[in-house]
Image (cartoon, rainbow over all chains, first blue to last red; front, side, top):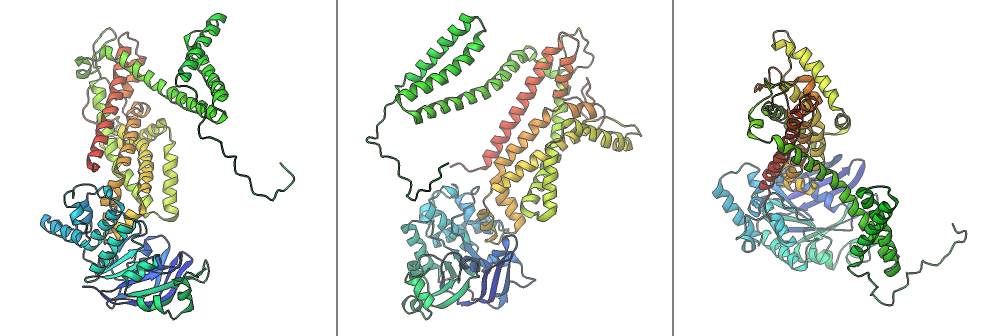
Length: 258
Length: 362
């Protein structure tokens, strides 16, 4: 089941540096939400704080509250691994595990979390690869290394790996920035299909992509370098791209930013 | 230094008229080499100042000068520099390989004299100075047991220590560990031998040896462990740092706990490098003489028990045979040295094959 993500007053730090400040935002289940904004404005930081990947870096911490269907994921007694199983993530650069085959990559999340039964793994692998539109391309070479695929295939492999653990929310951090237009199209199509089952939040620098794939768009920005990133405007994608209510959003979208 | 400040931008280099340039013919370099050698032979033998080695050395220098001059005249300065440096780099490679080839050649030519079944089946027990027999069976047993025990001790310890430094260690404590591991790298082997002698042989071993201190192969293994540990820690640490952080994040993002990420993603990715480091440390330990002499004492008889009584090792055997007053002992020393090198080589190849088997073929 897809879940609602609610951020209130989220502030994130890297050591002494405040990267984002007071982000308030609600993402409805089974929608695609795009986070856009200039480089360094904290979109990725916010995205990474949603599944507690932000704190992996030394000295990084998050304040405020982030809830998934009314459960605060930053509560003291919350198990980080459970949060990450519920909220999957796809990274900017495809990062298949180099020592594993295609099959092992897809079921890595299940296998490393204790699922051993071959029939379950086989079934999950096929299902995830079909959902990621990769099954037909790799079904004859599941035993080959994942790193031997093309960049676009690797990224879809990583998406398959993420959805194989059946998360509620899928976070995507510029998933197409290292890919060619055809692979990008494949992944955008994929997002449309995945929306039926998952809540998707995507960071992108490509505004056409945001306009194409998302239902809602959040625009982040910073005053100047060194200032924390803030949420400037959050609305339906249609409205953001046709008639934004904040001047700054309009400037960014029409290319008059900085 | 110019005192005037020019305000215009640096001019781009002049565009060449044509992309073609004059090249030395393919036979030029060998021809220069032959000419250099011939000239060098004439000089050396004409003046009567040396033999064939000097001819080659002088010939190499003349070759470099001649090649530079020829190339400079025909092809221009950039090509001349390129050719000279290429030749220098190749000579450096040859210079590095010559000692290696020489060592292997010496070992094989002198070591094959006693390379017989008897050598691998007998010890030096009751072998007098006039006895042409005798072998290194006891020394091979000693080396295998001591290095084996040392590896069993250091590999888990070293890898866990490296994992702590890379994945968990923060702040001063981790820094201190790294620092002391670095210091340990520089400890001479005789010092580790003395340490184990003072600590293990003289203080600890009397407790379970009826109050008398005793040499043992295990004490030698302890000394070798102290030598192997820093090599394994440092090489494993470097290899773990080479594992890209996105791989760890990819595993975390699947809800995989940290320890399992390290065990199932990070370590397998770094495995080939870790194996190389372990093999380097094993090779170093297998070649150590001093600690074994100090704490295992050496010995002529076969002793399978590493926890009691004297043991020898191949390196120690080589040392002892090389110093023995018998005309048969130098041949035994050479064969033992050849055996030691072959043993390390076989172990290295086997370990690399094992590590590769785990990796997927492209």
